[in-house]
Length: 265
Ligand code: PLP
Image (cartoon, rainbow, N blue to C red):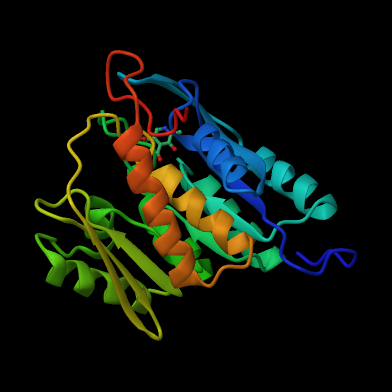
């Protein structure tokens, strides 16, 4: 990632993720978030989705070779300070992303996107093993929600104690740091960051709004941007948590379903 003329981190974020035609999640959420937080966003598309606030009606994956070509074009010229991955869809694309992260030595924020709120599979079942075997060991920060952490570890999660146990297992599986987001549990929304130096905890009141589409993408893109701007990990997560909480609190109705969290006024 070295660019000899600009040795300091300066907010370059490459997102490897899917397109949400409705603009609420995926690449579109990432690029809006990166720009708003003062970074420079670049994208390698893994799949197109036909999607709106009611759900996903179609998925058109990109050939893995062409995902690779997009990443190579960006890194060979512009470079990146942090790479973020979102919807990777197939085992081929997961393996391709893992290989690129390893080849370029990029710090990777991996959001293990699996299933859209409406139920559409954004990661094929046969790609989960590849994510565990190939991408987890290349991950600087893994950001699963509770269902994703449970699916990756096999640990049923009903409270904070199991969140922490699953986080420790994910560290043992190769992720350098793990942020488990507790928004799917009842009560306070608790997020736990597990690092080799210890555990950090954030808690905030549960917000009632239904406009939460793209929350996970927006949160992980915010963390990636703050890291790319040189913030230490716990500071980046704390600031991103404030950012996503404000985004959920102020999201306005758009469309007939779950509106996006990134309609900023
Ligand atoms: N579509 C794409 C392309 C995504 O990357 C994601 C989330 O990561 C989603 C949809 C799912 O968004 P949500 O579950 O918030 O509806």
